[in-house]
Amino acid sequence: MLAERFRAIYTAALADVLDARGRHRQTLPPELRPLERGLRLAGPAYTVEGRPAPQANHDAAIRKVLAMLGEVPAGAVAVYQCHHGFSAHLGELSVTSLKARGCAGAVLDGGCRDVDFILREGFPVFCRHVTPEDSTWRWELSATQEPVEIGGVQINPGDWVIGDDDGLVVVPRAEAEDVLAEAEAKAATESEIRVAVRQGLPPLEAYETYGTF
Image 1 (cartoon, rainbow, N blue to C red):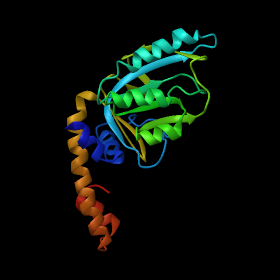
Image 2 (image 1 turned 30 degrees about the vertical axis):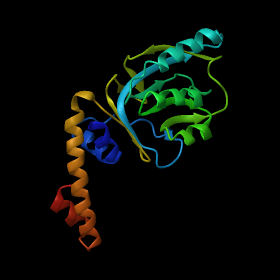
Image 3 (image 1 turned 180 degrees about the vertical axis):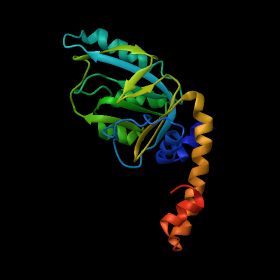
């Protein structure tokens, strides 16, 4: 299963493979961090976009968000481009809903709150900031399942999003299986290099022997 294999591979291997394929803008901004170390996620993107709305109608705004949360499919990663540098765009009840639907995680170019509750749920969330302030009075959903851009990286619905302690990588859907297979092969080679270097093989000689380092 692709999701299990993507969760098992580290993002650095994927990033290296994408670089070798000429895809040099596939890692999301380093400011998007997991709520705690050790969180991993992998799944096809369900894209969400929103915009500031200082005069937002609270009831209308929250209804849009709740409808969206009920549409994210099992196995997907909800990917938010919020265009909004403050407030929390995801909280504990939203996470509870996503987890109950079998979703794989959430990535927000925006904020999160209710961190303790979310961590107890064991649901992986990567975000730009944490704050107790609710976004519903200040922000509204504008689109779902349309291409979004985060930090210069375009994310299309269905592209694979993989996250670990190093950060987040986006793998285009059409290349997912090939990139994953190449990353798995690279990881296996790096395991051999690790053993050889521990046994005293000089780094340059290791590179010349294995073709990577």
